[in-house]
Image (cartoon, rainbow, N blue to C red; front, side, top):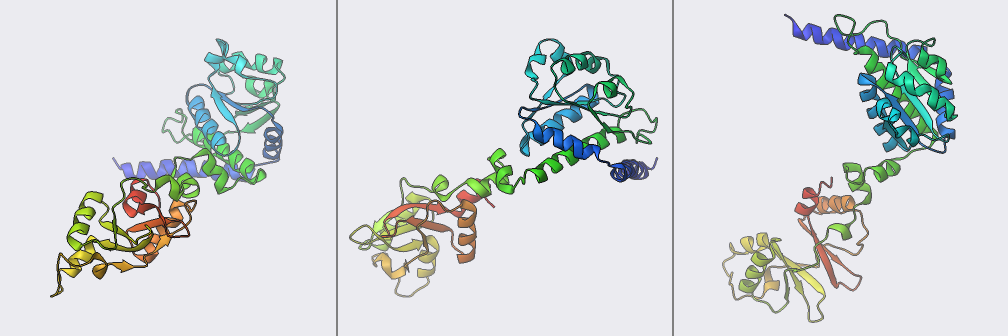
Length: 320
């Protein structure tokens, strides 16, 4: 059996379904967007079975893109959860046939509340179509299922139309990356836009030595600090230099190397620092990569040490 051909046919059928629907989009979409934009409550999505699964995904997409939304299962609605719907909400009800028994049972109650109802069905004359204030057509010419029975093309189309609605609403609200990140603070974009140097920098147990320290003492401090670097300060406690384990290894190759030497002999004087604790961590990473350093020292304007930020910390926290 040629499974590759079957997979290609399945994708082609569903792709053609989407393309055909795109050509048939009419002003119903404009009206649907207008209804949702006027909503002062929440967008409630409901449906049973496969339609319910698609509805749950749609609700999640709406909620994360600026439209307060939740999914309500019709069966749960019949047993008390109808109270979650208010006249200020908008309901999108999904049923390909439009005759789902569980969904049909709650439609009169939704209308009794005076809540605007948008139906997503193939049949405008179905029970769902008749109760709906607006119907978004999800009719398909053919399911990708070889028996033309299992919801495949129809669920793909419904999901895509839900995405299309969400994108229309994003455009209407001028929804930006920063808005998206606000709903996804733990995601990659949220970390890029909200996590600051102050959130990640190490401020305790810093490996600091003064400028009179000998190399052998500095090596011990590097080992204790576990940052691969020691910070060197002057008599007033201000940062003057850094010494990394790489600096020590390179120094070992010099003929006059001595563990009794002053640490400043092998130090990087006037190292790269950052005086802005509110700098985004993603911007700090760019700085670290551009300067080809591993440790960024955070100081105030007087070079008093506030903390350090290691490249490994940024990577571990998913900053990119």
